[in-house]
Amino acid sequence: MVSSTNQLLMHSKVAEYVASFMRIGFLNGEYVPLVEARIPIFDRGFMFGESVYEVIPVYDGVAHFFEEHIARLESGLQQLSVKRPSLQWNEIFRNLVEANRQGDCQLYIQVTGGVDRLRSHRPILSEMEPTTVAFLQPVRFEERDSKSSGIRAFAQPDDRHAFCHIKTTNLLSNIGAKIRAVPGSEIIYLSEGFVAEGASSNVFAVREGRVYTPSLSNRVLPGVTRKALIGYCRSLKIEIVEGDVSLQDLYQSDEVWVTSSIREITPVTQIDGLPIGDGVSGPIWRSVYDEYLKHRPEPSLDYPTGGQG
Ligand code: PDD
Image (tube, rainbow, N blue to C red):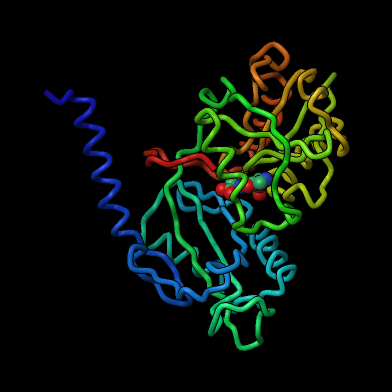
């Protein structure tokens, strides 16, 4: 006999499946059911990974740090020599919220170099129009209590490409590392002995009341949450140092956190099986997280299901 928990689970899976068919996304100027959205095979994003994306957190229909994410997207396009699509991002977002009636979610935007006539290693031609995709996907942002228990992290050599400062969809290493890792944990990349960033986050460490984070380089995404957090530390008069952070530094820290648009600011309480500080979330995390919450839109009361970014 199927247990009632299993039945509930089945119902929610069926509901999620049905809902995915009804979701409306944006593709090159059109609003279409996501399951019907199609991209030609000669799209340069598909062929060569010539593609940038953004994940913007949305709390009960209100986007957080919208302009900052769009600015990073447009900077990424410029660095890949992809034309800036002539689109009103704000209007697309509002239309998606209206069409999907989503509460807490992520706004996903991806822009590629566009469609060529054949597969060729040539540069993007002026007649190629960028391909733009946008959709909303439900997210369950962790609340303070569940966040405060912290997550585990595992260090590994940084085996990614040399353009980690651009938010491209080339995530072969990041996804592989996540698949191999303990669910809900984070991977911390080490480049030439120093911490670069997480597989989908930036990394912070606290020692004797001072906060440390790796400086920006081609191995570190300039995280929107990272930048906001640096600002919050400054306004709280907490000293923040951007520079080299080694794995030993992390092991010996009083607190370690990872930041991202979906994880917000999450304490890491164990790295490679070793407890960080007392092995629980710390007081500096509580103050900066309080500051973060003060500036964040309110989440919706009914949480849809969703994954971690
Ligand atoms: N990723 N570094 C990497 C490699 C990331 O993938 C992310 C976020 C960050 C944090 O950036 P931000 O604070 O701007 O979200 C740092 C998103 C959430 C994702 O790929 O789903």
